[in-house]
Length: 202
Image 1 (cartoon, rainbow, N blue to C red):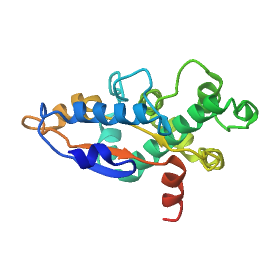
Image 2 (image 1 turned 90 degrees about the vertical axis):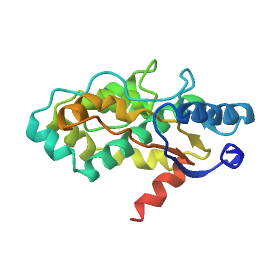
Image 3 (image 1 turned 120 degrees about the vertical axis):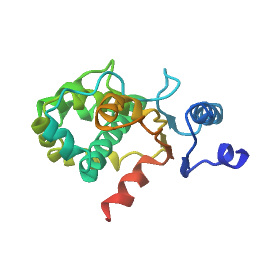
């Protein structure tokens, strides 16, 4: 536990039943970064970042397809985390270049032009999930313009995202013949620039 709280980079996966203190440990980790003034710590006005709201009422065939589409969820979270980091870094550095970029989709224009919200990955994830499925695919396909901006980030950006499974709980309960199993919590603490570069080589 001490080792985990002292670490400043890397990925840690915590697995434990509900109620064993995973979220509390994550909050303690966030506090240690805030006290150390180490990089840009996300979820600044929240205990933890998380998707909120209700899972959209997609058609059953779409839900069945998404349930096993790892690449879709990977691309979706990659987009949300990248956009979150870019917006927050621009605010911290007073960079106004985002105001002039051609985004290729109205959703990006809405997000980038709003200076009061859409800074957290969970908030972006929820807003994107509220689009029609085809629109989400279009947004993902037009997101490559973001990554040169991501590579400009020259300071660690630290995310604390938890309770993602709770957003999907209604769907999981509908699909499961019995009680839903508690999902594990994955905590990733990363320099956002390195996060992108490490995947662009794949």
